[in-house]
Amino acid sequence: MAKRPEHSAPPEIFYNEDEAKKYSQNTRIIEIQEEMAERAYELLLLPEDESALVLDIGCGSGLSGSVLEENGHQWIGIDISQAMLDVASDREVEGDLILGDMGQGMCFKAGSFDGAISISAIQWLCNADKSNHVPQKRLYQFFTTLYACLTRNARAVFQFYPENAQQIDMITNQALRSGFYGGVVVDYPNSTKAKKYYLVLMTGGVQQQLPAGLGTEESNTEQISYSKKREMTKNIRGKDVKKSKDWIMHKKERRRQQGNETRLDSKYTGRKRSGRF
Amino acid sequence: MKLLTYNFLTSKCIKKVKVGYPLKLNIMEQKVESTNFNPEFIQRVLPRLDWSAIKIAADSVGCQGFPDEINLETSTNDTELLQKLHHLLLEIEVVTGSLICPETNRIFPITNGIPNMLLNEDEV
Image (tube, rainbow over all chains, first blue to last red; front, side, top):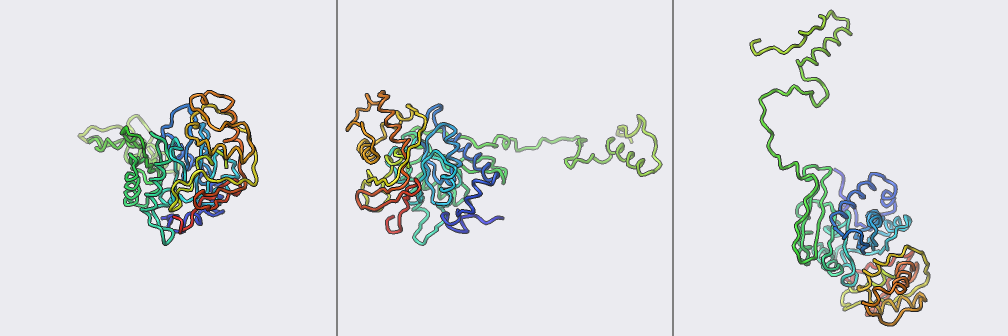
């Protein structure tokens, strides 16, 4: 299994020029980030047809910011990696960029933003990158200052990659301690590849239900229906089920091609026999 | 850095800073880039703006014609004012300069349009 980036180096070092280049050149990375940004934007539930001011936390090369721009919003992004912000500058994104550490707090005036979005960033807060880092304190500082700079009824949506259940708990606990309501939405929980975690936080007083994760409807039918009949359908591997009429016809063809003496085909070839045989 | 961002930035994450707002603004290099005027956005953001910081920004870049105080109710429909605000907040970019904390005088440099708000270990 590939090493988690957080175990290699602190983010400002891990996201160096070479890594940052991938975010402007590697189509797979770009595609995945865009998809997650669009899903997070969907969960953000900003009012339609209105231009809002959104904070992008861990904005990196501005991929998620571009999704906000496409929907007509203004954004301000913060990231700890100069190299990533340089890529964003080169891409000439419309949003304003700030070099900063989210664990030190969101240095904005109260009630500034209509919403906040973050793609693949907050799991970095769970690891201590310096000797004076206490992850829980940094998470708490982050969430409390974020809560303060959002407007009433604003939402904050974070797509993140938790290493384990303890990290999900640690992050969620600090978020709820800071005054947010909400929880984690999991898309495609049964697929290791497609599974994605979104922390959805709300500041509003009205308790809203968390949206359902994608790909959770099929999991309701847990039982396989019992069937007496042997399935005469084609095998998933693409080969015919053994002894079926198709299989017999194919085998006879093969023998003819090999030059073996084969009986002629007739209406009786591979016919269904009754149970008495 | 646009002046809209300047209106929201504070230095309150530094230990012992009480308010940290408004930051002092030093501009060495600026540029203008026009963008589409969206009056609804300016109206939406208007109540969140601190007017004294607007005056500081306007003086630093040389934009004139801003009143010393505004009345929110009448200003929301004042298209001329909204257009002036759009120009000030979204069309002027500070390329090089610095932001200074009013309480500790700590300098946050702005390079290539990006303000560096990273705090040192002893400031957190």
